[in-house]
Image (cartoon, rainbow, N blue to C red; front, side, top):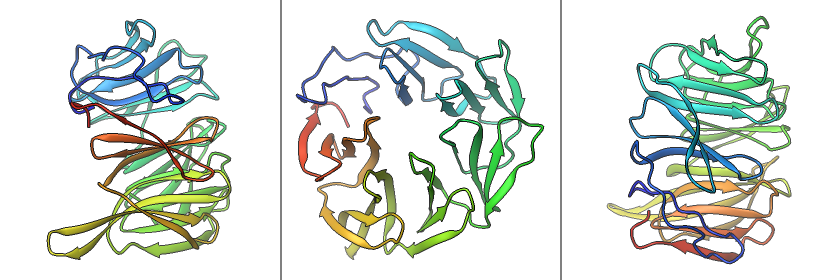
Length: 276
């Protein structure tokens, strides 16, 4: 929430579970839950450290930092228990399950990062292409595509990769072969892969000066064929799929919509008067 508070909801009933929690460091910029939901890892806007909280008490369990230049990005690979903390300037710090102290990890110039499903490699986009970077720095990186992207999205099973700028490019993994591409008529919002070989993405079409039509497109992931379009009331701020693949969460305006990934039926609209 832009108010600086974290709110937890029951996804089945849509009810608020706990009183809002406000971190001491300010408004949360990024937050990720562990697979069992017992802890949450995150950092706040302008913060110089990453904090792991106990989600029952919201007390810090572990703190990483401080980083001299502040936190730019955190990448987690739960399968290998690896954690990459990227500062605003300088090399990243890489922790794994075997190390007490982090290793330096030089990413170079990058736009977006995501780990592969097995956690052994990073997919890194830059202005000169998309690269596969092993976490073992003794191994060489490999360029997947000459195209980069402001956002990289990996299929949960690892078979496809989507790159987003003002266009969409979907690549086959691990070969990097391009399956399809599409120029977006409007501004790209967020996207997610859904079960059943589907890809969703937000799109803001200009109807007339100052008037936008907010859309959610559902496409066949391997071909790009448009399956369905849903009108939205506000721009799509973020999209995420539950770990079991059954629920789709869409941040739209001042609410979070929970939809079934199978039918895209609206199940709940989570809203708080002070939340966005």
